[in-house]
Length: 199
Image (cartoon, rainbow, N blue to C red; front, top):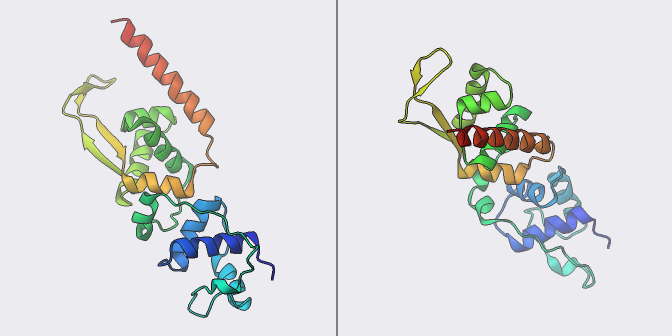
């Protein structure tokens, strides 16, 4: 009996991580392959072939001895956060902001706004939505800064949460233009170092 590559991956996940349902298997499959697939269709195909019963319990005796299942390794942080890792609709700017926070550890609202050439208002709205999803957390600095109009303010800094990091791990950032983001970050960092060296 021929078993397709996607079916082998699902079976490998089911063999190694026994307790997960269809929704969770979808997330594990997505992380393993970095491609979308109809996990419900794959499971149905395995039922038709007699490898799974109607309750999605596998019977590995139906698999030929010469059929090798791939070795699947899922990081612990993904397994720990599975119930919160539902697919979330997110624009490229929001994903890019998460990526920047992953690279920099923390950023101010003004820095993110300047980096992406977006208004502070738009950037703040995106960060607020990310904070509501528990992907980022924020705090106000105790050190006062002065804006271009001479007004003093306490900058707000944003950090990526463990859930935010894990979400990036699963849903990846392959569609993002990470090379341009990295170049922009390097340019700003070298400019910062140049200014610091003057004092």
